[in-house]
Amino acid sequence: PLSCFQVIRCRAAVAWAVGKPLSVEEVEVAPPKAGEVRVKIVATGICHTDEHILEGSFPDVDFPVIPGHEGAGIVESVGEGVTSVKPGDKVIPLCLPQCGECSFCLNPESNYCLKCHVSEPQTVLPDKTSRFTCKGKQIHHFLWVSTFAEYTVIPEYAVAKIDAAAPLDKVCLLACGFSTGYGAAINTAKVKPGSTCAVFGLGGVGLSVVMGCKAAGASRIIAIDINKDKFAKVKELGATHCISPHDFKKPIQEVLTEMTGHSVDYSFEVIGHADTMTAALVSCNMNTGVCVMVGVPASGSVISFDPMLVLSGRTWKGTLLGGWKMRDCIPRLVASYLEKKFNSDVLITHTLPIAKVNGGFELLRAGKR
Ligand code: NAD
Ligand code: ZN
Ligand code: ZN
Image (cartoon, rainbow, N blue to C red; front, side, top):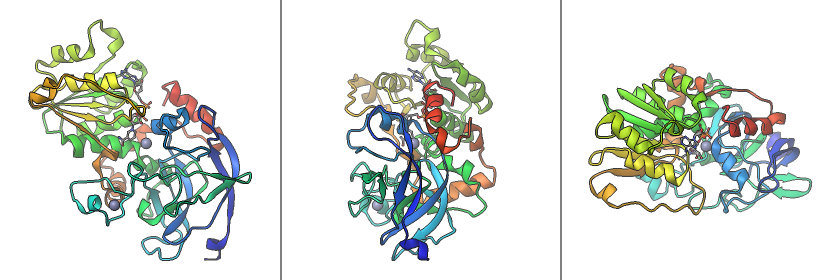
């Protein structure tokens, strides 16, 4: 209990400015205030959204900042009034919180919370201050979770307590990539047994979409990527066809129509480019097709499209974190992981110490993870 009054000095990967590599620094992490939890981060994944931050694609993220949002850890101390977790509990920090009180949280159909970053900046904690300092400067939080730090402070409603048996170096992927992709297929698209799916982009998130389509009983899964190195793994996960747009002169949507007759039942864009988003829309059945946007476009991106594409009956939708109400569902997903209902471990390509965090980003850029 004493520790909750102490500042912790530990390492964190700080992004000082747009376009600069991360710098592993000693930082001070202040104790949690009322309603906050201080978590020792044990493991974190690298998601392409972290790369978008380093590139400066999101103008509402303030630098310097500690990125990272796919972590898992152990509660170190709690602030006044915190009742749902205690020191020693294993938790997953939630980059999409669930306050439980706002109108969106009260809507059973919605997984968006009005306290999430889309409505309120999460570069400082709810009281508008930061718990991180480095070299005398205040460092910003990212999505309230900042998992590229050995210790981080998070609002109570943005952490989910998970099973004490969960291996943190594996279930950290449930904090974003796996849950997003798997949920995009199961919750957002609601893929039906026997259907045909097309997945554009086979990074960690796209591979998880394929796992979700397979689990939902899709009979044909067409996996699309310009990097053919991704094909071996996606076949193991259930893709029935793998194609690269570079192998065809005609647009990929025409290739898909030829392969399937009337195009696919469900298409997923898991890259984040306006042109592939439109291609994914065109690629689903004109009347009953569902296209799900998963990839995050650069801020300010605009798409123009022929309204007939939607008028004829297609559904175009998006997903945040796969549609899961995070605080309720992440513990259940961890339980399913422990029951071996899915194998998210296949997404892990490398394990690196925090000192090599930039090496992790190089692997991401090279398409090796
Ligand atoms: P990643 O970089 O690992 O994977 C992207 C894949 O797309 C790569 O394999 C790349 O080769 C492929 N690709 C690039 N251009 C292509 C093209 N023109 N045609 C076909 N394939 C192409 O990324 P990731 O970590 O899997 O994340 C994917 C996207 O999902 C990112 O935009 C990320 O920000 C987003 N995301 C969204 C949510 C959400 O809540 N909606 C959550 C997590 C991640
Ligand atoms: Zn992510
Ligand atoms: Zn809420």
